[in-house]
Amino acid sequence: MSSDIEVIWTDLAQAWSDLRVQPDDASRWASLMMSCDQLIAVAAEQGLTSTAIAVAPLLTRLETMTKPGPADLAAIETLLPAIEAALEHPLQELAVSPRQPGARQVGEPPLVVLYSADTELAPDMAPHLEQHGLRLERHADALSALAAATDGAAAAVLVDVEPGFGAMVEAMVAELGRRGIAWCAVAAQSDYALRLQALRRGASFFFVAPLTVESLLPVIDPLAFPLAEPPFRVLILDDSRTVLAGIRRAMSPFADIQLGILSQPHKVLEVLQFFAPDVLLLDIHMQGCTGLEVAQIIRQHKAFESIPIVFLTGETDPKAQNEAMRLGADDLLLKPVATDLLYNVVTQKAKRYRGLRRLMEEDSMTGLYNHGKTKALLQQYLQQAARLAVPMAYALLDIDHFKRINDTYGHGMGDQVIMSLSRHLRQRLRGTDVVGRYGGEEFALLLFDCSPTEAVALVDELRESFARMVHGTRDSRFSASFSAGVSFYPTCRNLPTLMARADESLYEAKRAGRNRVVANTPSPG
Image 1 (spheres, helix red, strand yellow):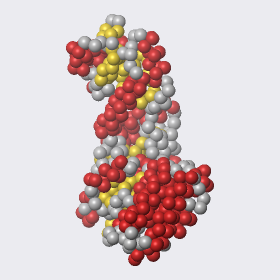
Image 2 (image 1 turned 180 degrees about the vertical axis):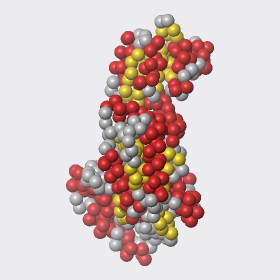
Image 3 (image 1 turned 180 degrees about the horizontal axis):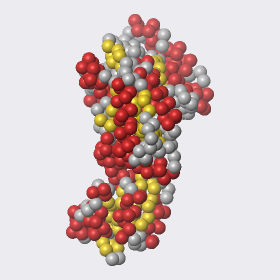
Image 4 (image 1 turned 45 degrees about the vertical axis):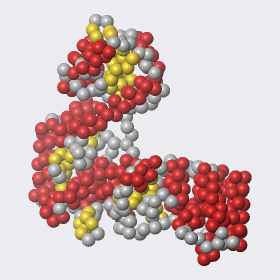
């Protein structure tokens, strides 16, 4: 074992030996506690997780004794063999630590590990998570929970912190952080101090027990199924080739920045249209016009009025700077701009802009595209399908007997069914497909480069798998289904016809008894 660990273990063994001789001596109990505290700290620091976790029960026992004495010796002695066993091969553990998370097998659901001795913390949750594409493992032992999380490449670990951050939990969450595994705290009480402790130790979220599938999914989904964020699109307008070249060099190391270069102000509206930047960098002083004038022209167009504009200038006059802000600037940077500052300003503005766009384009409940955005994308997909001469399908879905679900189980449960279907569709569709909430319990699917046969088979598989899902609570379980109508391009050659045919097919599916897919293939419209 390492020299530090060996010295501390020797001190601990000596303290224990002394205690057995004089168990009424409070100073000897204090000496044993100090050795335990040192051992767990050094073990955690050196990555000896099994040692730290083995010492934790002993330290916890010592800390909770009000007046230790001879009667406590037997209980303490039972905890020592586990520490000695953990110390047998510390160098071997150091050699492989920190462990690299295992690789999840293709097609295997992402793993969520629950570490808690409380069997009632999340009753009957495993089958519900399974139908949402997640796998839950429970562990009451910290080492087995860590091993499962590491070997199974866990998306997240749920750690029961109800007793507080004792030595065992401290050692575990420190190791999770060291291994780069996301963890969330769980407790029955929403205590501010406990939340703060969890935050300081790197918790991704704090759940208040009892855990439910509905509370877990919005937090676990982004960890289990991370979406690849496209690079931030940054357009710079400056008539100085030198400045443009300098900005290009400064931004080139950052893979999350896609830079567009423009030196001719009169082309700005045209470039904004096709480049669609997340941020516009604009020089204030240019030949023939000023950046302030360009900003005013941009802000006159509704499509561009919310694009963040960051002015680059050597102007130090406060009046000129105030005028720039008044005319629509979101920020102003003085040349020369440090690379780190430029990058941070650009990315923060871009993130906020994308967030605002999502608010305008996405349904607030499900996070899917809203009606307006879905319809706009449908028009774009039609144009692209025509240009590339590829087929496309449009499907309209409607949850069957949704009013009955609301009336029987309550509107809250109806919302949960909507959320379950939206998540189900989003997970199972291809990256090139689009799913939107068209309104109420209706959803729209845009299946690009998809033949009629493939589209009908896909929608029917979605229907069957959704109908197998179980909703409700332990005492009130039920299933739901949906009906769907599908139309196709190039059979339907324009937007009104494509939408009308899908709508007609949907109502035909409902009239035929619901829980079915009807495809419409009329003569070209």
